[in-house]
Length: 254
Image (tube, rainbow, N blue to C red; front, side, top):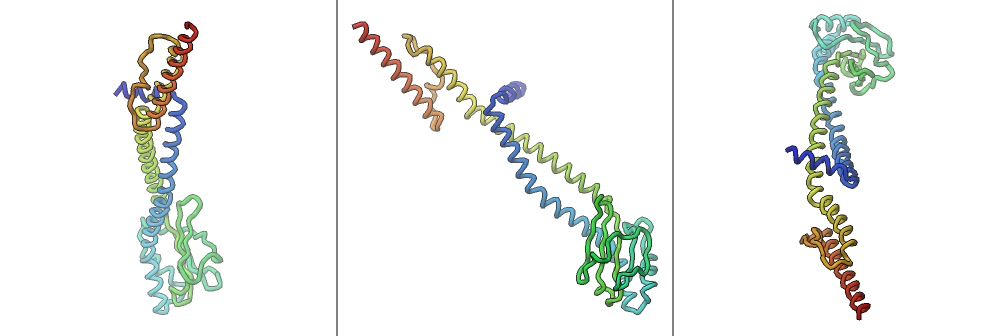
């Protein structure tokens, strides 16, 4: 393991290796981020939908009372009695169709009357993401009132932060692992042969005019790829230059 670590650290000293591994690492992070963002938004939407279910009991109470002819001034009072002390419902408000406030309790919703849609529920999440508001249109209440409920979204925020940290940790671990494996494979297939080819070319430049020819690592390797072709071309070039030098010396001696 120590030898593997030293080999990896030594490989990272190579400029080409650092450049390739950096691009591999950044590419994995980018791909995972592209996949993670839609997943995060979808999960956040699911958690907020679970909060919406908590307001259904109050909604149905107000809706039934409105259908039974209860005055709008008493609708919210009847619903407030059904809310438990530790409920996620922090407040609610009822408006006339002209936007005037009828009644409210708890925290006043910040969702403006002008932003409430008439045909479907309107959602609003505060900037701190600790409060989530939902406005129900008048069509749900015999076209008599608008109902807005304010929910505590603190737990959702904390849970999503933990979810994001967990996913980010897994992405980083996965990226490091893939980058490490890529680095090791890169060392065996590319960086090490390129460095040996460099050393062989330097040695060949000094040995081309000598009688004794050292054994070059690159020239002796049989590889069925581009590096193998480069090694064969260097071997042919070395032998040709060495033969021309030998022929010239023989001609000069003659």
